[in-house]
Image (cartoon, rainbow, N blue to C red):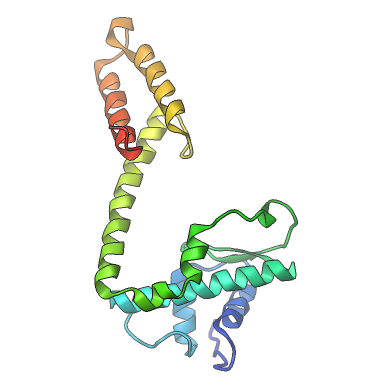
Length: 197
């Protein structure tokens, strides 16, 4: 798709046009690439290898996406699913989507002070924090899978499942020592994640 964008239009209008042309949705990277290729005046023609430039483009994009989602919801015309991996338009439906809970990401991206006040050092810190969480998140997910639990399980349920597994796999009851060690290691990871260790 090769679109040229009208500089008089707001970024939300450009996004709406792109998303209407692609019902399956687009990733954040695809949206940025199409906006840059179409010479959208809202996206600077600067190298994305610069972390501060990339952060600012990312911020402007998500600010516009959250504003568009609010507008579409108020018009009762569509629901906008927003994530870095896929942004897509969905049909409007009354009900669960209409329940307004506090959305920390929406609050962050709609506060333009974050765009103005974030320095290159702040971006470096955000990236380091992201990769630390990603690594820890993979460990946590693997530990929960070993326990046969879902990601949103609370700590008391994890503790109960741990006791059940230890009882079931203890060598004194015919279980395997290596399996018990895996269960204990998984519990250490989960305690660290839940700040109980």
